[in-house]
Length: 224
Image 1 (cartoon, rainbow, N blue to C red):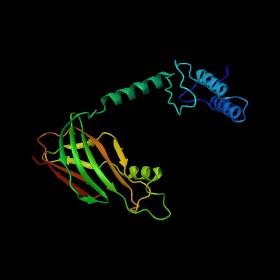
Image 2 (cartoon, rainbow, N blue to C red):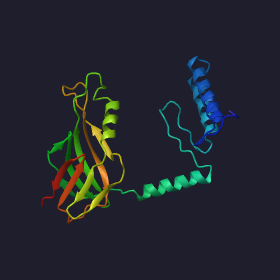
Image 3 (cartoon, rainbow, N blue to C red):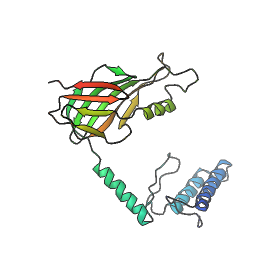
Image 4 (tube, rainbow, N blue to C red):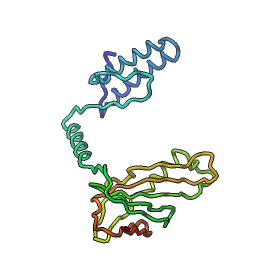
């Protein structure tokens, strides 16, 4: 263990190889019975202590995957961390909902806009998506692969209101998404509900919201 390199964000090839060699050796010794469960756990704990000496309390081996935060070693890495934390702190929280504008069953390319919510510091646009029936040779629409492929196509549409406000997506990806498709299912289509997040927060005076994507339009009129 004395020669095991510590974990780094950008390890050298020889450091990566040395760590993999130690880990593989432990797994092999455990698989062939040279190390029993207690001994394997103890040596795994020692390996992690050598690789990540900054961890005060090692996770219990065998309890599933663990996420290890690697501290910065260079000024550049420290600057990256600071920029990441600043961006996260500036990201809208959208913790409270001040107003909800209901959508409609109008659907284009399988996509319906079901609601728009005005939060304290952002605006969320909620949708319901129904995909086309999958070809016979395609992955099951209920598989994780099909779900991920569908999410990649659901990019935030352009959003404006009748007061001239143009809303900017906080992220190019969805802030929430779930699928209610399950097997067995007589309808072989992907069904997803989710939301995009925009800034700024929609003003109370905005009465109509226009949504556009790929030449298709949706209109959400506010009702009182």
